[in-house]
Length: 270
View 1 (cartoon, rainbow, N blue to C red):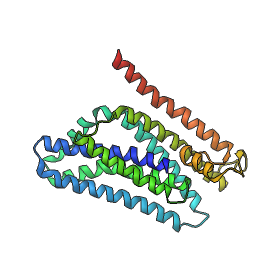
View 2: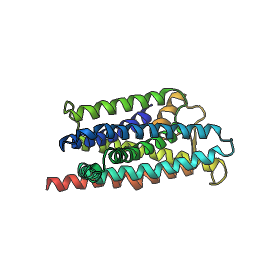
View 3: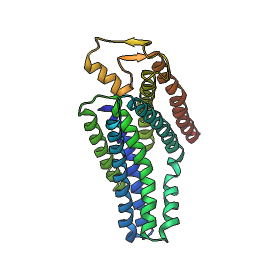
View 4: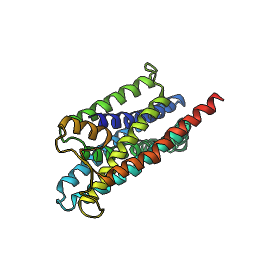
């Protein structure tokens, strides 16, 4: 529940901020007649994202037991690539995101509503499709109960509330700190998805060490197993390869993510 909540909150707020920037610039430049087209494009992107998530779930359920681990492992690794790239992309472009969005609106506004709807669709769909893929792979690793879905709904709801509040300037959030904290949390979750993805390939014999456990807690309480697996991606049965992958991913990306923020802060103070 916690991991899906954090994913939905972070990614949902990113999408809400982008939509808010689109709407604000359209209104600011006196192009309110294009708002309907913008919302059409945003709605289509949301629909496409939901459809993509449903397609992944349907495809997984229809696959045979022999093929499904290949699909699960491949989608996990694909999700990690996209999520890692998006986290660092947002870190690099957040400062100039407003200008980038304004440039896109200016570039297509003279072409009419359809062009703006397509621009809004592709801008939001990039976030939505990546989020659907990451949520799907995370759902595969956490509890099969309804709690992850509750976390998803709560995270998206709070993201929309915060996005609307910031757009109307009724809610003030330190966006820089928010993205630092949630980005770090997403990297920890991604490390777990990476480890579980490799374990799928271990179980089908592509990678070695399927039975070489760093720990194997048979008697671990179910609530404890759900807590550490759902939050950190560390299950009660963890192979040496999984542990190495988890540590390697975090040591590679988390310090790089945090150091870039600290460098920016020190530059500002100087």
